[in-house]
Length: 372
Ligand SMILES: Nc1ncnc2c1ncn2[C@@H]1O[C@H](COP(=O)(O)OP(=O)(O)OP(=O)(O)O)[C@@H](O)[C@H]1O
Ligand SMILES: [Mg+2]
Image (cartoon, rainbow, N blue to C red; front, top):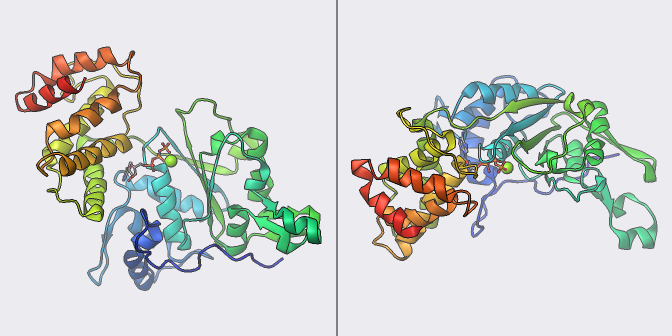
C-alpha cells in the first residue's frame, strides 16, 4: 500500500496564527543545520543525531549561525532521547507536569522529520481508530470499504511517510486501546483487515509518547507495551539559575511576539517568582534554613512562565508598562492557591515567615497580602 500523504509538506512560516509549529518558528535554524550537517543521518532523518542535539540544546554553527537552546538542562537526557529514536524502540518522555515533555517532543519531531504535527492527544474516551484508522462513513456507505473511504490516523500517516508520530498523554488512553500500539511498534505494520492490505512503516518512522506521573486516573502501560519504549524522565530544573533561564527565555519570546508596550521583565522579578515556586515545591527555603508547608499544586516551571506572562499583560494593560510586584501578585496567588482551603495555610505562613522577612521583597509581600 502506498504511503498516505502527510498533512503538511512544507514548513513555511504562517503569519497571523497564534502559535507557529516548531518547524515554522525555527525554520531558519533547522535549514541552517540541515545545510551544515555532514554527519551520517539515520535512514529517513532530515539531519544527523548531532544536528538534532545541537537544535535541542543550542550551539554555534561554523558559519556563525546561532542555534538557540530549546531544552535547558542536562544535555545527556536529550542525547539518550535522540539515540533511542534512532533505534527500533519508541521514546516515552515521562515526568511531572510542566517539565517540557510536550515541548521536547515537538522539537525532536521538527528536527528529525521536519514535521511536528502528526499528533494524537490521548484521552480516556479514545478508541483504537485514533491510533489506527477510521472511516469516512458517507463514502463507506456509498462505495463500500476502499482506500478513499479510509481516514488514516496521524500514526498511520507517520508510518507511511517515515516520520515521527507524537502521542500526548499516553497513560490517559485506556489500556486496551494503548495495546493497539504493540504490533504497530514491533512489526512496524498496520493491517487494514477490511481491505486485506497493510501499511508498512518506512524508515524514519518512530513514536514519541509523553506521560505525566501526577495524573489521576492513569492507565498503566502493559509490560508488553512498556518493553517497546525506552523511558526518559525529564526532571524539574536542577538549579534556580536554570529555571530562571527557562522562564526568561519563554517569557522573552512571548514578549517579542506580542509586541507589548512594556519593558522586558526585569530579571529580579523572574528570580523572585521562580524562587517562590522552588521553595514551595521543595518545602524548604533556598538557603536550606526554613522548612515550609507545601501547597497541593504542582507549581511547575510552566506555571511560573504563566505567572510572569499574566503579570506582563497586567502591566501593559493597567500598569505603567514596567512589571511590578503588584502585577504579579494575583497570578502568583492563583497558582499557589489551587485548592483555596487547603493551600491557604501554607501560603499565608510562607508570606509571613519568608516573604516578609526579605528586605528587598517588601513590595511583593504587600501586593500578595492585598491579593489574598
Ligand atoms: N527544561 C526546560 N527547558 C526549556 N523549556 C522548558 C523546560 N521545562 C519546561 N519548559 C517550558 O515549560 C513549558 C511547558 O512545558 P510542556 O507543556 O512541554 O510541559 P509538559 O511536561 O508537557 O507538561 P504536562 O505534563 O502538563 O503536559 C514550555 O513552554 C517549555 O518551554
Ligand atoms: Mg504535555
